[in-house]
Image (cartoon, rainbow, N blue to C red; front, side, top):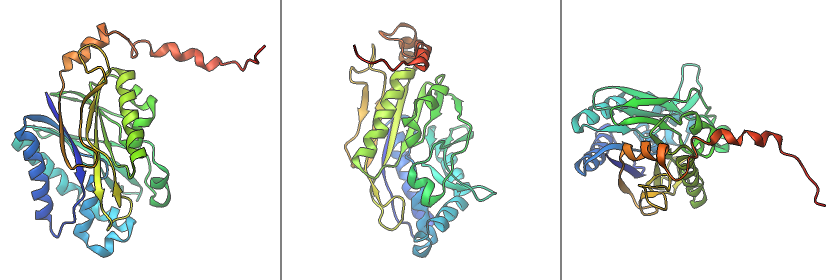
Length: 291
């Protein structure tokens, strides 16, 4: 299958029709190139705060609530586009305000046959914790879809190996990200590539790109799309199936065959996934003076 992963710029919208037009154009472009899985980034939905006006955008809590209030409409639009183009879509993640007023960072997966599911981010960055007040919310999930088993690690989550390890039965790990600087991009990319190596699956990273100076939390964005595999037989020796151009908006495309994933798990040159438990002895490390 062909995967499309976005380097996505945030836009100011004067009305809902403008957002609908943007999203429809992006989805149609990727589907027109033959992609069957489209991946949008973390906090790409922050642009929806513009629909509530400049005053709301100056208050991050009010902006979060305004975005959360639109997620029903956002979901309906994604499902309609998924059905129209016959694609699976990981929508851009958004702050969702729960009934008890907690805020979570939620990414939803939509299928062309009308199903949807979501994954909440597990581990918050320092800025998400304070001043924003976003909280992690379990559980981790694996979605069994017509194009394979899909897991999601939202940005910072990809830097923690035990999360993806718990999702090791997945074929694809989707890593929507939002990073303001080059070092942040590379932290997430290194995490995504490491998770692909450890669990012998394909990791797909999407990024927000460009400035958004009218909304705190996403003022500056650095990244690009990337599709990463274990560097083993049948995959590129670098582990890079595809990568975009840094900070250049648009789709990055790559071809993935699930049979290649199954093959390296059983007959690859290394067996990281199967040999994982052999690390258990690290619980008994001794401090030994040199003699």
